Image (cartoon, rainbow, N blue to C red):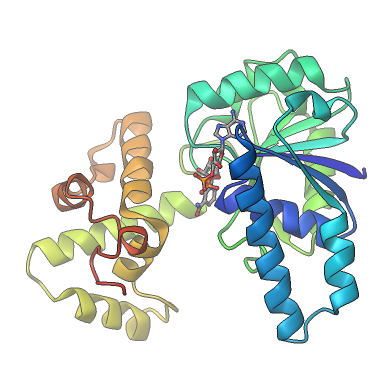
Length: 281
Ligand SMILES: NC(=O)c1ccc[n+]([C@@H]2O[C@H](COP(=O)([O-])OP(=O)(O)OC[C@H]3O[C@@H](n4cnc5c(N)ncnc54)[C@H](O)[C@@H]3O)[C@@H](O)[C@H]2O)c1
């Protein structure tokens, strides 16, 4: 496996492209508009520049890594790649459309992976004629830093596809965990309801936002409090994942807290809007 195609040049797509290129793979990164492609390539260049400044890599290594990444808006450039990872927006209809196109364009043996954080791999795979070669490869943000990759099997994903992707994650220096498809997979099914509960604790007036976070940092040994983490992930993203858990399981224990929904409606999305549970300059 040498040629990798990344769909989406946003936060995750650019991080994924960087990590593949740093590990010697040739990468093509595709977005719908050239300005998004260029923005993604700019983010990668800045990250590598910082690594040079910190002495983690040399200037020559930076140039080599950048030389392995090519941007495009043309999905037909996926025709002779060995592996595709999709990191476009979290929308089932858009992902199904992308997978249908990739299935038509790509070679027969090419594995099509998705970085979705909550959607059904089985449903995405149903838009292709190769469901045994469709799989979840769920990286965490920021991709160059976070070690975990959840490797998620859809209902028809083959063992061969699973083993290939597991090995691929290891080649990137990541630690893969095997996950059978279920809403929220492992991390988000546990993490996001915990954040939702912290929002309930805040709404009930049990403690202030900063005391809730301090309590969880010191009492549960978490590196960041649940409310600051929600602001970091984006409160809209947290709500979207709670909504998925609630609608998929139909279980009231996954009810998104009304305060979370109210904050999203008010545009208090966290870091990206400058205000969520805390304020950001
Ligand atoms: N942000 C996170 O912390 C995180 C973590 C794990 C997984 N994810 C998942 O990764 C995926 C991407 O998330 P993100 O945070 O990078 O989003 P983002 O909004 O930063 O980037 C998405 C990019 O996809 C592009 N895009 C939309 N339609 C496309 C198409 N048809 N072809 C190519 N590109 C297209 C958009 O123009 C945009 O640049 C989502 O499925 C998300 O759930 C996100």
